[in-house]
Image (cartoon, rainbow, N blue to C red):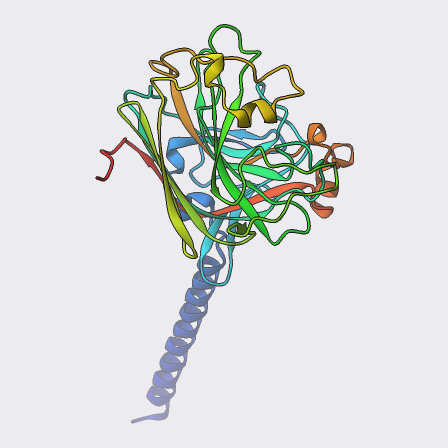
Length: 342
């Protein structure tokens, strides 16, 4: 083989190695970029096309596929699992019907109780406000799931709460039913049912004197799940957690149990003793025929009305000083009602 041919072959071999090296580096960069791609909530829980959202700073979006916002609605990995984070301050921009901030999904589909629907969620509450007034029933709490009426008084037949007093290791999970008031809505009230720990009515003796810590409560960061199944007008609730007994409830949304003043529970009379609202009764058919929809996320119940510190509405200062709510979901579904398990 002559020298010219040898040199030519050597050049071709070197050039091929160079191209292969460049291709490999390009492939590595592409892989690296893909690995670093930030996940959005719809990558973790793929039902986001069925929802719209309101964030604690007033941001709204009707298209949640690929949507996220730092500090409010984003993905966090705890070392094992990706979670969708809902975070909201004690004070921010609220909806027209509430003084409480929320970073919360609102179901696009509306339904009547007779038609029903089903919502599930697996979550852990990471933070509730550390400032507030212990005598206020909604202080130090966040709502993590709801059924909201879209007609009439626009009351809430279901609110699922997590509440923990400062200094306590364990908090409470409970759910409230708000009556669909007969006549005007001044006398509306919530009736509360404990799941683990206390119900809504257990409050402190004074602003900074807290009730006894619940023995069977749920700690911050402790995982639990709920299922809300409204089937033919009846609401079936199931709550489960690894270290707690599974708890179930059944409640009609089409026939009241609070139709007369004599039916108003003592719990309600005690909770609303010093307020205008709380003395009403419910219409006989409750929420029958009235459009409803699910909500899920972090609906912060701690604001200036509950004595919490809001730092003149400065969200960054609220986050830095504990005046916020933060809820993580790893799984959730929404869809049609299912026949209850027997």
